[in-house]
Image 1 (spheres, rainbow, N blue to C red):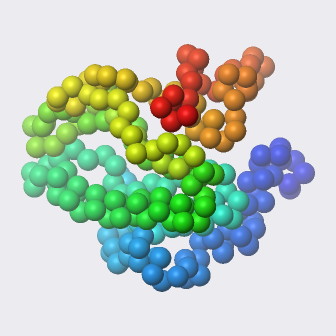
Image 2: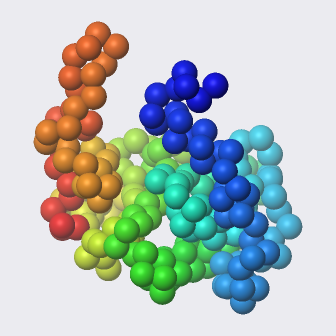
Amino acid sequence: MMAGLDSFNQQAMGMLTSSRIADALDLSKEDPRLVERYGTGDTVKRIDDNGAPRVPQSFLAARRLVEAGARVVTVNYSKWDWHGGPKNDIFSRERVDFPIFDQGISALVEDLHQRGLDKDVTVLVWGEFGRTPHISAQVGRDHWPRVAMALLAGGGMPCGQVIGSTDRLGGEADSRPVTFAEVFATLYRNLGIEVNTVTIDDHQGRPRYLVEGGAQPIRELA
C-alpha cells in the first residue's frame, strides 16, 4: 500500500502506524507533577456539537507528538462559536474556559523552554475571526472579520511583544496591522522555508507562491 503513496503520504502513514504515536499519547509516562502543571480534573469534555473537548492535557500531548517526530500539531480547545444567550452564556463560558486555557498554554511554553525546544517549536494560538466590538441583542458578541488576534511563542522569536493595536472599541486596526499572510510567512520561515522562492504547482501546473501578495515574515519577530 505504501508504494502507491507520495513521500509526504508515506511519512504521514509511517507516523500513524508507528508505536511512537501510541507512546506519545500515553500521558501516564509523564511525571504526574508535570501533568498537574498543564491542568487536570476538568470533567467538561464537550458542551455540544459546536466545539471541541476542553482538555488542557492536549497541550502536553502536542509536545510529546513533536518529540515523536510530528512536524505540525493542531489542538482544538473547547467550544469556539460563542454568541450569547438568555443566561449570558458567552461571559460565563469565558470565566470557566480562559483560566484552564491560560494554565495549559503557559505550561506548554514553559515546558518547551525547559526542554530546550523553544527555538525549534513555534506555538501559535488563534481563531478564524474576531468578535464584534459591541454587545449584541443576545447579550454576547458575534463574528467580526475586521480585527482578530494571535499569540505566538517559541520559534527562536523575540517574544514578549504586543505588535499592532486597535481603536478604543477594538473594532478596527489602528497601528501596525498584521495580516494572516504575514503570520503564515513567519511560520514558514521558522520551518526553514523561504517564501520568496519556494513555489507549489497548482492543478494546471502553474507555480504558486506559498503566501499571497508578497507577504513577508513579521519583521518584529525576526
